[in-house]
Length: 159
Image 1 (cartoon, helix red, strand yellow):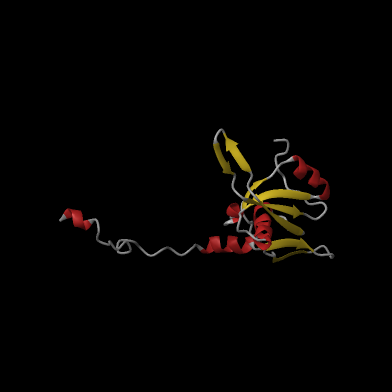
Image 2 (cartoon, helix red, strand yellow):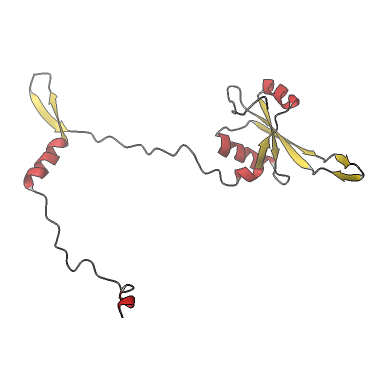
């Protein structure tokens, strides 16, 4: 029955001894580390307790964007979109079912910038023809995002 012994829980605390208490000398060193020597205006040397510095929690640089990648499909880099850069506006292709509030939240999550205004436009697909075959491209939604002056979204330009 050696196979089944592997699945039994083994108590690990039976063979171990109790942990040793720290030595008094080590405790004194720890207490000395908590004190700081200061010279008073009279010239005396006095030891006072150190102030413990608060440790700031550092947030990871890359945050979870959640479902923002489904809302913002891609930036539209066109001649007209480039000319809107003067007015601090950026053009994105977004999900067909997204509204202005969802687009604003997605921009905030992905780029860390709060947009002033979001305009959306429903773009209808164009008729296309390949030889005798006729069809249409799909409908899509365009969002024009206006940012405050001084804010900027880094995108690759000149594609």
